[in-house]
Structures are given as C-alpha cells and as structure tokens.
Amino acid sequence: MKKKLCSMVCLCYFVSIMLCACGRKEQGNPIRLPAREDIVSIGVSDGDKYAISPNTEGEATEFIDEFLSMLMDMETTSQQSINDAPVNKDSITININCDGAAGTTLFYYVDKGIEYVEQPYQGIYKPTPALGNCITEMLASADNRPLMVTFQASVIETNHDSIIVKPVDGSLELDSADKFYISNEENLELQIGDFVEISYNGEIMESYPAQLGEVYKITVIEQTEANAMWDRIPMVRIDGKLYYDTGRESIMDARCGTMDGEITSTVDGTEIPTEDNQSNFGSGFGYQYGADDTIEIYMNEKWFVFEYREESE
Image 1 (tube, one colour):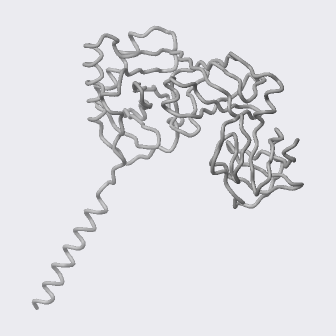
Image 2: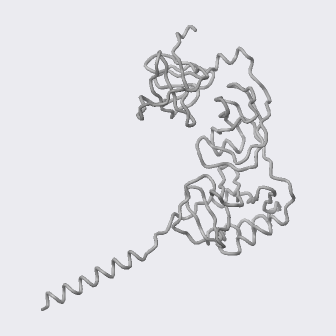
Image 3: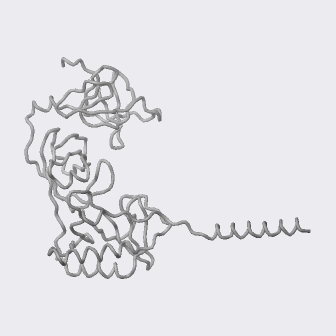
C-alpha cells in the first residue's frame, strides 16, 4: 500500500512539473545597449523627419538617462528578430550614437495595436507607453529635413553594381566597421584606390561588410590614374599561382556545394599577394577551381572569375 501511495505521489509531482513546463513561455534575449559613458546622443527618424536629443550638456544627460531607462524597462518577448530591419512594418528608427565606439540601431513600430521595439538579430520587446510618447514628441518638434551624414572612404573593391569601401582614418564610420558595402546605382566609373564621399541617413546596419540605411549620394573626390589601376588589380595567390580578376561574373549554373578553399589572409590593395590563399582585396571568401585555369570566388552572394597569368604580365 505504501509503495502504491508513493508511486501516485511521484506521478502527480511529475505531471505537475510537465504542466508547468508546457505553460511556461520562453523569453528571448535581453536588449543590448552601449555603455552609458559612450553615448553622446539619441536620434529618431520616421523617414521624413529626424529629431535628436538636446545638445546642451545638462539637458542631454537628463534626456539620455530617461530614454535609456525606458529601453531597459521593456518586456522581453519570445519573438525573434532575423532581419536587419523589421519586415512589412512602418517603423521609426532609433539611433543610439556613441563617441569613439559603434552605436546601436533599434526600430519602434506598432503592430495590431501593440507597441514593439526591435533590435536586429537580438530580440523584440514591448515598451511602456512612455517611450512611444517620447518618440512622438521628438518628431513633432523636428523640422522636415532628413538627417544627412557624410564620410570619406577609399574604394577597395568594385563590382558591376556595387562597391566596397574603407572609411578614412579618424571617421566615426571606421569605428563601426572597416568595410562598407555600397550600391552603385548611378553606375559611377570607379576603380580601386579612388576616394569618394558618401552621404547617407546616419543608419549603419549590423552586418559585415556593414551596410548603410539609405545612401543619398556618392561623390568622387579623387580618382587614381588609369595606369595605376594595374598596380591594384584584385588578385589572389593559390597553390603558388597568381590569379587576376577578369571583371566577369561566373555563368555556371550548377556547381558543387563544397568550397575547394578559402582566402585566409590579405595584403594592401597596392601589393601583390605572396602567400597561398592570400589576396589584396580581403579575406574570408570561399573559392572553387574553374575551367581553363581559372578560380571562381564567392563574394557578396555572387561568383567572380579570376584567371591565372604569369607574374611577368
């Protein structure tokens, strides 16, 4: 009798534990914010207007502290963020700007009457109504001019409809990333080594290479001489042989899903690679052997053809 009673008690305990576990709703990751001492301002934008926190020291400190307090007081949900920005949502961008460190971009939106704040790839949160009221007041006091931020950079890679640039030393953008992927919608004739000035809306996406929210304009500041391009043509050394960029995208439809190798080191764009799996345009790119003594390298979701040439060429 005692054994049966004990078994029943254990069974009831097990069932109660299972019911509690089934009813428990898993929570997502907590929000990640920069260190308070690094934050210099907070801006919000609805695409048409941009508003920023007060610029006087006393008011700025008080505003930033209150704004961060509202962000830290949000409820963590079980929803996941899997994109650089909310999909199919009319969102407001929140930029937490830092001095000498990478800032953070958040998105505020209302979905089915519920307010949310999304941090890309980190989580989705429910704020208190005070945050939405604060954002509304900021935008109401803003002018109609969108934020425009500019920085200078050198072109380190060119493709058919895009470029990859490296921000100049001392720029805030370089603190965020050493490479930026920029769409070349105007089809500017750019080559490696050119210096450009890029105007954008101040948003930096958390990807690599980094991407900008909205690019307004690319201005050419200085172009390299035509013959200097040959000193900087993208090239890679594999199995002791030097392969040069042909400027062509691969037309191969079916290919093996396994890479034959990866570019593991890089040198300056003006130098010639001296070690195997080394390039002068970056590292981390996979490659496969192609036909007729070529290498096909996978970059920015495309395959580009590099051909072997004698180094004397």
